[in-house]
Length: 250
Ligand SMILES: NC(=O)c1ccc[n+]([C@@H]2O[C@H](COP(=O)([O-])OP(=O)(O)OC[C@H]3O[C@@H](n4cnc5c(N)ncnc54)[C@H](OP(=O)(O)O)[C@@H]3O)[C@@H](O)[C@H]2O)c1
Image (cartoon, rainbow, N blue to C red; front, side, top):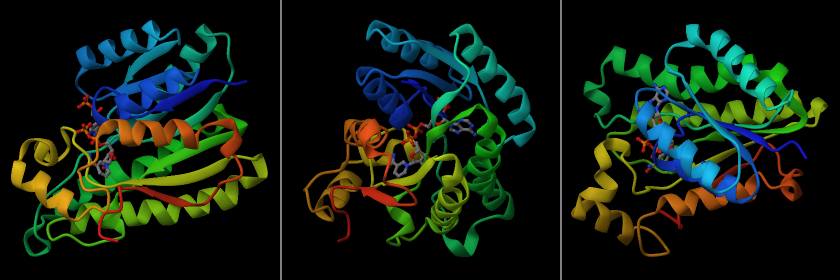
């Protein structure tokens, strides 16, 4: 089986957790980081300690000029592993923005577009020659694309767009037997958004009180779902939005 999964933004948070769950499931992982090479190196070590292969590559997903060089770097890692293709691409990297609609600035909107829509679009396109027929793409959206919380208009609009993109990718890549889905986490305790869900007790309690399962999400809640979705037996699921939010705002 082709075992290799590429995860953007694997140095911390959800991407790191996905990488560890996938390694435990027998996958090799190429992960990316933007700034924190030290954190990325620790994730590589942790994956190798689980008996899987791992590599970390720098990438700023907001800068599409890097994508061609990044694809070359991925190809070099694959060659070093005596492999010619990736099994899956997880478009995970990203930052948030908490700003009211009335005062969100044009440059903030443009940055969110570059990170959360342009990157999944153009990076997936760039990596298509390296993605195996029968492989997978998993885009990462947010519960905020389904329910509306003030202050998330720009971020959530881009996540909504990546959900539409997912259906088109699934339709157009189905001929290569590539399945494409989008996972929408609810509020999870990571560094995301300044770590508010994890570190602000009032915010954490607010999330828990609006969640059917009665707590905020943890990275393991998402890593486990990603490993499951990318398991061989789930290939028939394609073009779907899967929400993993513990039942937020049902
Ligand atoms: N946590 C939540 O509540 C939540 C909920 C729904 C959806 N999500 C989505 O889940 C994804 C991961 O979020 P998270 O909670 O893991 O966030 P996080 O803990 O802040 O980690 C973000 C990761 O993305 C990387 N990254 C950030 N900006 C980047 C850029 N411009 N180019 C390349 N890499 C970049 C970071 O790399 P460095 O370490 O090098 O900075 C890091 O690996 C995001 O797409 C986010 O929108 C999160």
